[in-house]
Length: 621
Image 1: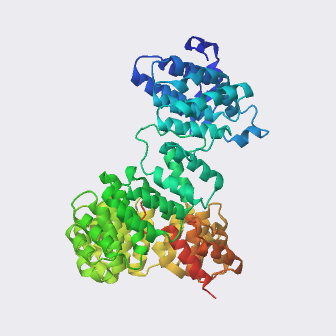
Image 2: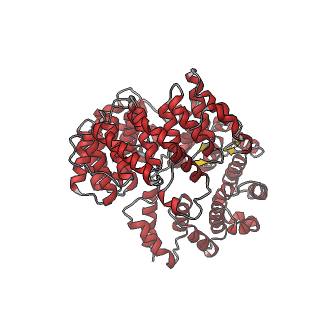
Image 3: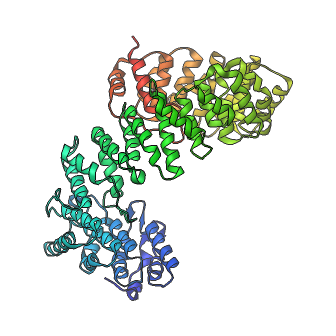
């Protein structure tokens, strides 16, 4: 260990960290010794950001280790945070330590320094504060694979003493993990302490792999229902927090995970852990949503804060549309929450709409908002006479941003009836609230007035390229004049910046966009995959021939967002290369989800769409 008086002996100016020169490190380390707690907190935060930044360590990291170790033993506070900083700096995959490029690397240097100072840190295993003992165990675990024999024996002996004598069960459970890293100690599945049994079962499940033995699942279900009351759920080297690590472990075996989630929910869903686990399973595995929705329904009364309750209702809303016939008790519960007037009412109402419950329409009309109205349009298209006035009301009331865009988009399924909202759409275009969506919808409505023509002309001169494109397409739809639209897209495609957004606007023009082919064809081989996709679609729309498009689209097919878009385009073309069929079969029949949900998405789950498209394309001759 090195005291702060030796900081000036290190040439910090010649060392670097995440933000360049490490000349600020001595000042930060000195701040740890001040009585000003706020200054010490800020120093630790800065050290986490510069000598360890997003999982990376630097040349200045290893020289800081002996000074940080001294601060652990001699600074006035924050010993647990400093210990966790040391453990985080030394985080590594043990397999890396045997690789040829390990020696001389910054992580190896950090670990070497930590091994040297570890004897001075081992007394922290007996510290009066549980947080310090737990953090110290993580420091020992971080370099367990690198300790020389003598130090290893000393460390194992002290960790064994913690396992045998510590008064806090959570600390003894941590000692079990450290001993496993050393390959020492028993597997205490029969311990009288639930925390230790749970840890032992988790370690055994990691070793066995899925499907997990029934006795391990039983221990996890029984002993994991009640989380440790402390707020020191520190991560281990190579993992996230123990709780998240256990959730991730259980999602690898959906049958075991759902069995555990059911038990945790029945025990009160403490920490919302059971309902969280259930939700994670249906995001990872296909066709488990009926079981998950049953569990989430049982968990709703146990939610202790509105934010968690709203999240669980949102998860229900995400999956309830995929039930053939949602159960009455689920619909009735959603109806009760939707009428509650609390923050949970909105996600409950959206879920009720997606359940196709006729009572939802009345509630939407009573308390309209953009999200609920957008959901209601797709479920109750026959209610145009009631929904269109509600959408108009929200637009007239000043809806802006994504809410306004969603409201305008909700008009599209109503066809000609959407022209009733013409005054509101005109106002959106005039005030530039959801102007792009409004221009597109006005073009769809098929009614050209002098006012609309004037506004589209103004939009055609906008600095917003998306608005210029939308105005050009709307003008073409309303007048049939191709010249202005072609000139607009010529300028857009010849300009700088991403072209795929503009290419996607060419569909309404079809063959009328033929003069643009010299600009489109070179983009079929563009470096950016979204541009190749959009160029292939545009080429097909313009020429009516799939010849150039299919190969480009097939090459993009993958379980990715752009691959999903390529599948949609192939479905529109109606051709499937034979060599693509094995890939489509893997998409169609995988038990695991191949695409994750998109944040804040109101549309079909991407993986469900991927599977549906794959099955449809396989059915083509």
